Image (cartoon, rainbow, N blue to C red; front, top):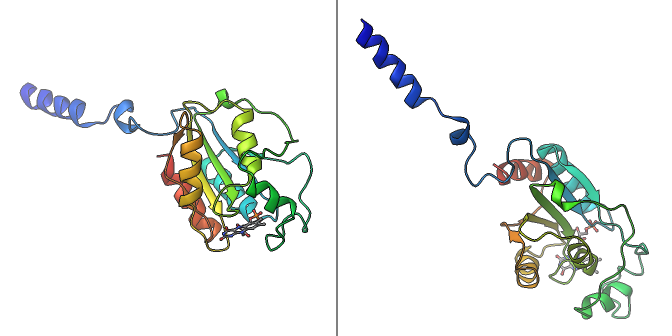
Length: 188
Ligand SMILES: Cc1cc2nc3c(=O)[nH]c(=O)nc-3n(C[C@H](O)[C@H](O)[C@H](O)COP(=O)(O)O)c2cc1C
């Protein structure tokens, strides 16, 4: 009888997962860790996805705010002299930011959302990435667009900021529920 009890106990010890086993070694969020959901949005589409993602992962939502807001005329991509056309034609353009400040050190990982502009992220997102120190941080991009994929923008970001641990991004043109599901899985 004693041997059977010992056998059952040893089976229980070796088969029940420890805390370390429950938490995959490459999990993005460590126990108690915080997630930042930073986004840029001019007409509200990316903002909807960002809000759903922040709710889904219990993250802190941070809006990347340009010092000077974009007017509809600024966003006219059919006008090559519009503000957005000029900024996107100049890869060194870094529009100034307003908005509150944040401390990247507080976060385990960052979801970074933006609209696709000319197959890239808007230059204000570059200003954001250069204003704060995200080196060594896991950054998970997401985007909305008319139809373009996110791939070109992520490739450019990876080349410009190799010190950041880029994870695979996602185009969030579908429902906010789909964005939320993806985000939950992305940090498991
Ligand atoms: C200046 C500008 C350039 C754009 N370039 C593209 C593009 O290259 N491909 C695309 O599919 N959509 C493009 N769009 C559409 C936006 O990506 C799309 O409307 C996005 O969802 C807007 O997000 P927001 O509402 O968060 O600002 C562009 C929009 C603007 C204003």
